[in-house]
Length: 467
Ligand SMILES: *Cc1c(COP(=O)(O)O)cnc(C)c1O
Image (cartoon, rainbow, N blue to C red; front, side, top):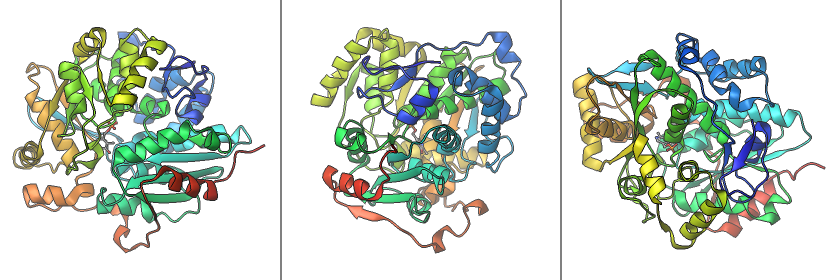
């Protein structure tokens, strides 16, 4: 499969190239040149497969040319063998219509593990074929950082620099990053917001002083391989609930639009999806964009669901590209306008195209707390704040009764214990797999929210590209 940039001027790459590159050199994001499509019979034949096998089947069309089916299956078995639940992403029923897809059984308790455990292995595989080192630079509102660090800690030929907004991640999230003391792991806390951190990372990818010296890689969901791995659990849930014979709706707690975009990809591949419900908190740029075409960034309001405290959703660009007839030049112009003014209007084609599959809901702090309480009182489930926002949206979306609605449970409730306890009086227990997190030594470098300070730090600590 060949990968093309959403901004139309970077060279096309194969899967291995797109995985190592992360962001395209023209500032765009890579997407497969075309969507592979399964027939209904092919989808039906996937029912009942173990997760690692389903993953290899769903992802094979995307990796062709870079990995064989057999090798891909070895990698998915290794990645998903580390999950605490044999089903990897088990499905739970909440009431007649509502379901939860539990995506938090990986090592760091959030759905990011599903993609990043595989991505760590893909990096190792592709770097092993070359003489390159990889300098991963990432921004995190909490969960990406811990999942990426777990996935690459101690791996050869990789250094990871993970930037988080100081004081704006939960204590569990911070410790999951800062207590990993492997020498290739570098935690940086900056003064500022997640959007500031993400803007620095994007700038570094386009900074020839950095890219000339270091082989910079991405673990944020701008990396296509992450989205690809997330497509799989939409198939897993759909198949359990009757696909390809019955459509399913999904409600997705959304920040950077990566997870829900994977649902869009599943739909392009033939999975019958009735609706993708984009759930936002009060940082609602996506809700405004999808309901009336107004994609304009406000300032970030910190909430109890920090992984959704985002005003610029990187992956939305992928959807706009696909809905706008894949015209890279036009999209590059649209994005340049957005980058200059922090606001843009969707075109009618984009707005109408999105409306066919997507709807959106916004939840404030009360909506979230009420959804956590509903989960506990009505279904006996403790929900983390992100998942609760998803469930709030799922129940409000007005999906026909006969269609199951699956909320993606994106984090374990223990990762956000204080918010869960405030809503329910119950304090969720950390699962034993996280061990003695609160007794371990932490290591982290604090820097001002200043691009030069961060690049200086990376330059001093990273290994330059080989050759
Ligand atoms: C990252 C994250 C999200 C948002 O996912 P996107 O792919 O960025 O939209 C939602 N919930 C949790 C718990 C997360 O870690």
